[in-house]
Image (cartoon, rainbow, N blue to C red; front, side, top):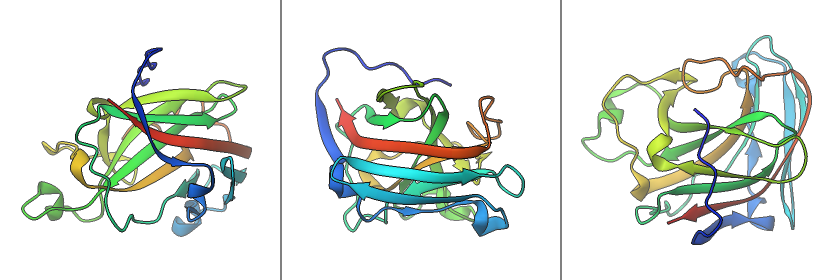
Amino acid sequence: MIPDSPPTEIAITPLIQGSEFSDWKSLNDTIMGGSSRASCRSSDKGLFLEGNLVEEGGGFVSCRSPIFDKPFNLSKYSGLIIDVEGEGRTLKFAIACEKKPLSLSNFLKGDIRWVASIPTNKKGVSRIQVPFKNLEPARRAKPVRLPLRFDPTCVNRFQLLYSKFGQPGKINSGFSPGPIKVFIKSISAYL
């Protein structure tokens, strides 16, 4: 699924930009025996994800935020806008939500991530709109086949990945191992 393009006039609220990415950390396929290496480096303009991606043994690199002390309540918004330089790659954006009592997700082993594929331009900044209604629940790149609904009231982590897996249970058709350099300029919410 390709996210919708943002309209020309849209009300945007910045959530994370520039040096506010300073506490993001890399998480790569080495956690599952892979050998991809990438690191995160923040600047006053945003966050760089740089490294080398190896398909065997995992096939992903990523940067993720810490778990937010106070989750974002994004219930008045329709989705997110990601400003990113992605070298023409189809990246994946993942959102984690704080678990609530009596939620179906409490009965699953492991955490649920709400994901969307985000295609980027070969050059320059891509402004990608990710409507909440298009997010799909996943657990370790596999689809979750329960009647879950994304809860925008308790967003507690963001993650940007480049992976051989696209939407839950599907291969990223544009995946290419090797050197990678991605720059995240900002994450905003739109009405």
